[in-house]
Length: 170
Image 1 (tube, rainbow, N blue to C red):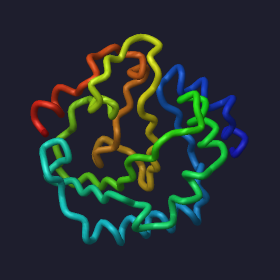
Image 2: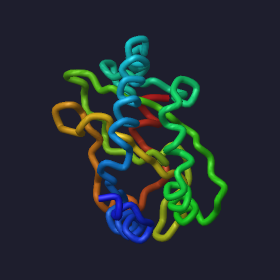
Image 3: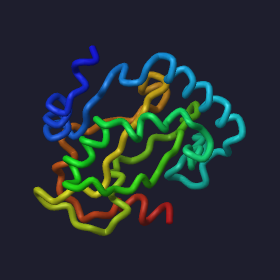
């Protein structure tokens, strides 16, 4: 139902849960082309470089250099309106575009926040530093290593650095 794709439906979910799942946001045609491009790109993508990336996981970086199938998504007026509302400004940086293919029997990543690489303390009502969008070209399952969402974790306090990443990866 395309009527679900409104800022009035999305922002309350982001605020309460910390995420919002938009099923069928991309057209079937766009999703099919994107999936084909990702399959093509992953054929030449190496496996992870460290424990955090995973020895059996492929990460294809710099996607805007390699496919045009995401262009429409990052200039989508609704997505830009959501970002402006979350960050309080129309100015933001698209900093990471990566396709991730988690391999069979890959170990689990420890729970982490993607803003944890910045040593900025997270206290109640602090502004967001990072906003992620995941485009699932396949279903997320435990068996295929799909991302686990921790409802409400966007409100958790922490020091601002992921201990695992800073002690085991860098």
